[in-house]
Length: 115
Length: 112
Image 1 (cartoon, one colour):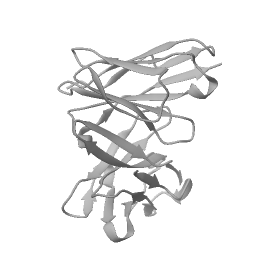
Image 2 (cartoon, rainbow over the protein chains, first blue to last red):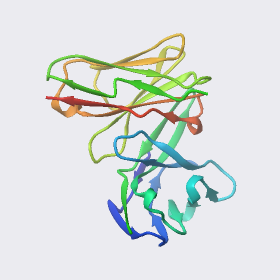
Image 3 (tube, each protein chain N blue to C red):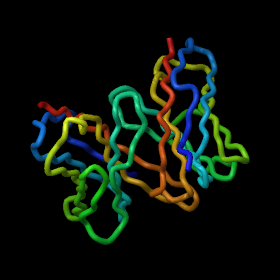
């Protein structure tokens, strides 16, 4: 069965500093990988996704992520964090089984941005 | 293009009661999935509906059931509510591909 680990429960960075959120996955085949962001009381917004091809993926809001098969990782990065980036971030692995599909999420990393 | 709409936004129920949550899928999407997100946790897959039939289910008991209608909207029903059912329930619609999920803002269910 697939699983996702986000080792950092809570991260604090200063505005303007760089950011890296870690994600490790377990899945037997080539995974579909996602990063979502969730603001308090809100649903999930897709930041970026990886299906195949270039292992460096660009997303919205200046985020990027790099797929490293050898490390089973899909870390999220941003060169300069803005105060509005404070939120909960979820990494997920997706699988398709015939007509069914589902996402398995990590437990999330809460990002706090100090001014 | 309309997004995914969920109703109600908040709900308080008593243990043992039944609840129905509703979801209107995004235009052009024929698949609806439901997720439960407990406080401080990531979302957990409940089940998925495609063409009005359940075609995938997570590790949830039978008292969690659903429906999908011809217009692809969906309901999540939970019977015999337990305190642990308190959570944010998220609906996501897609056009069968796992890459095309659009999530709604969720329904916050509190069981007292």
